[in-house]
Length: 355
Image 1: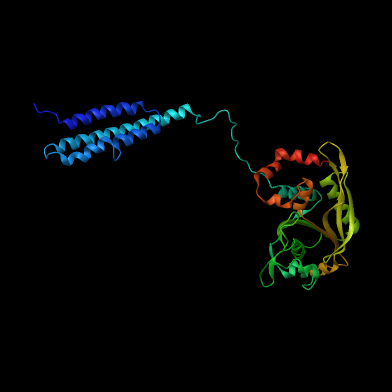
Image 2: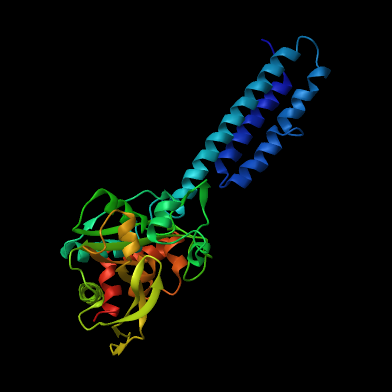
């Protein structure tokens, strides 16, 4: 009977010892110590493999084969136990789903507060017989200035002839070109509202942005007087700000209207403690009777037709309506801020300024 090599006997005893130690390990740190002790470069199994060179040619193959077998068995045992320890640690620790936390609601979009104001303004004027009109955002000097009775050497041009794309073509600085384009295509009566983006070299601060929305209105017909002008805009102001709103018209100047006026409102505001106070006078738009030169530029007879026009910035109106201190807050894409203007929370905001 062939006697077993002592090294093979040692390897088998080492295998039994190591497997018992691996099964008793309670964490990854203990398993790492065992791995280094048995399988590391200076470990016990590695030490036997390094001594194969001292064996005879007949002893070397069976001892080497047994050492490699023990090494593989221990490696598999270490990996299996590490998996068991990790699973056990997850079960003992926090659950994968913490049912004590509130559920996450699905994100839902909403209309931007400035667009909400545009829609509200449009709804009021639509009920008074206005129709919506559009025009290009890139327009020529003729439509942006000259047709509107504003020569290129006029001081008013210096603030607005800024974003040129090529000769004579620029990003419009107001939506008034839509008025000219509409009158060129249609005969009176005309009653339009033209919302859209405009571009100026304004600073980016609490009350200005270089790109902003604007709303222009135009009425042209036979017999339109300053009385129609005042009555229409006063009716809009009271519908938008509330029936207790006071309206005043201050003389002003615009190249394309004569006479011209700034429209101010004074409204009732409900404070946080429930008391109601009257605001100061606040400018909301510029307006005036259409200058006869503008009517002539589009082929209308100023002796036969008259009209009025007005323009306002809905972002600034939203600033006043919702009590926001800085215009830039509307455009920073902060969901925490914009979520206040969803349909569910808007009533709370507008109630604060209710008439």
